[in-house]
Length: 367
Image (tube, rainbow, N blue to C red):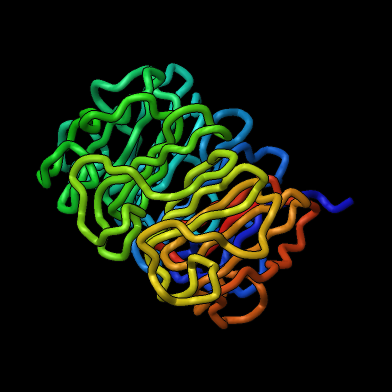
């Protein structure tokens, strides 16, 4: 059996595919250099535009490798020079989870504190400054963290007590504190308790309340111009509101792309809402949805990842389906044609366990 490799496809203008080239884009899977599938524990993808992006891989030794765009230090290697093959994030040896935003990155450490690096114009590193950092810095005043998420220019952390803490850009209410004022230190989302899962879009956020798999409550806040909060309006929300929807059997996982949102429901079906101009909701239309709609023809979904305008799903048979924008080959089906319904990405893998897509970019990672 061939050795399992970390794979990537889509836009590569910034070296974000990590295959050692600057080839414009790839419509089928290419191998990320130097990383075997066996040593990769988690992957994350970031990006702030269609032709930029960066990748992160958490390894079994709890170090993190990074590649792609680095103009703001988002690769964490002490420089601001991009590279098209993985290199090590410095001063980081105890990571347990990773997240990638527009041009910043986060890592959860084994002591359940958080570090961040990269762009910090809006305070998204959470260290009390607005100065970019090309090496990891500690997010101040945050402990007992169980999950992290990164938006375009803001960050989230879920603490063990079920509160959600946010910092960074806030012009659309994405910090959920009732204001539109940015903040460079973490503070809790107003009135939100009992959260068990979080997801960050470009400028909106989702939280799952209650037991995953049985929960029927989704809270959302932030930007809502295309219905990505799912509350049947297009009004920005500065504190959490209920996402509408009939969640028969419960929700197991929430995911957000740039301006769209996805829920994995019991049995492995999907519901999606928000922006849909490229078919990223997968319902066969290009009509944005202000409440959740089913993604037809998909069952047994294990994982989902949301990109700038595309969506990727990993099914129970370890195959990958994707839909939405495809101008850079980010659907991985060998074409550059958009698809409003799921297509198969022939990933040339011996079975996929994890997937990632950048909420502000046009590429995909799979391992």
